[in-house]
Image (cartoon, rainbow, N blue to C red; front, side, top):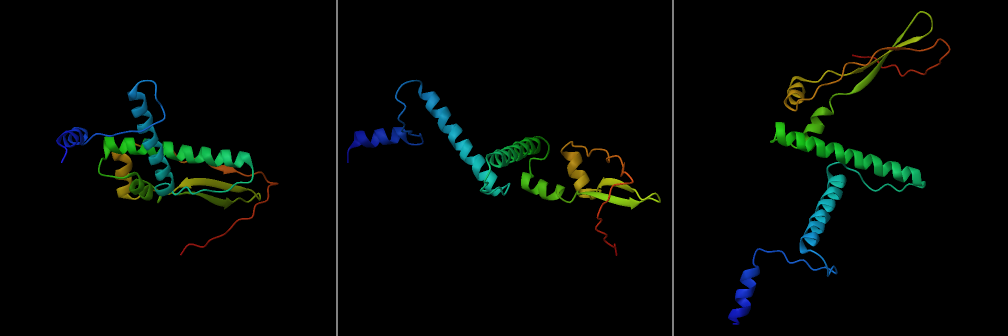
Length: 165
């Protein structure tokens, strides 16, 4: 056994060895770029798994650009939520919080008027008590309910009527 090679190997134990075609410059720049690469790979894994964004094949360039923008904004919101969770609720995951907040939905209530118009009341559903607690813990606030709208008498709408049981 070659004791010098063994000592050299033990000296490198627990250290990273990066190989690159970048020959000039500061080695810390190489390390920074490597860390950035791992962070970018993590972002793509997150987009695919946590956010469920899959490749979509668009035919038009502006649709591709819009898809990338929406994916980027979703990722930014997810990171913001993760940072807020670290501060206010470290035991929770972003996925669990999003699943819980998904129970809050926006609905439109359409009420006919006597003059052939519709009163439209956009409303979000009231969160359950544990969702309210989560919102408080994250120091978030639900916005005020949106104001009602009134359609013009000439507008025609097809309304899907659902009976509540």
